[in-house]
Image (cartoon, rainbow, N blue to C red):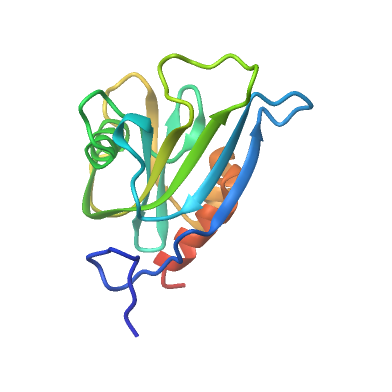
Length: 185
C-alpha cells in the first residue's frame, strides 16, 4: 500500500509527524548553553527563525555524506541566506557541497534550538532558531564542487554512514527513521 509524508506529493514514504526524535543539551556537559529538540514534521517554522537547512539525500539504499572541513562526514547543508527559503537553501547547499540535483525534496523534521537563560546568544540567530531537515531523492550527482568547505562527497550504506559520521550518530533516531522509511532493504 502506498503511503506518503503528510503534505507530500510523493506516494512511497511515510513518517508520523510530531514525533520528538531527539532532545539534546549542547554542549553535553554539566553546563550546557542550549537545548536542541528535533521533531518530525512537514511544517516550516517562521522564515525569520529558520537558520540552516540540511538534506538526507538518497539514491537506492545509500545516503550522501560530505566531508566538511569543520564538521567531518555529515549530511549536506548550511546556513539559509537572507531572503532565501529553506527549500532554496537546501538545494543550493546540496549542489555547492556535493553537486546534487533532486527528483524530489521534502521537509521531514525541524530542530528547535533554544539558548538557555543567562547564556551568550549569537545575534545572527533568533532565540529560538530552527534547523530544517529535508529528505531528498537524488536525480544526479556531480560530486564535490570547489567551494572551500567540503573536500569529498560520496554515497554510503547505512552501516558505513553510522561508522563515519558523528552527525548520524548524534541524530540516530532521525537518520534511522528517514533511512528505513526510504530504503527498500
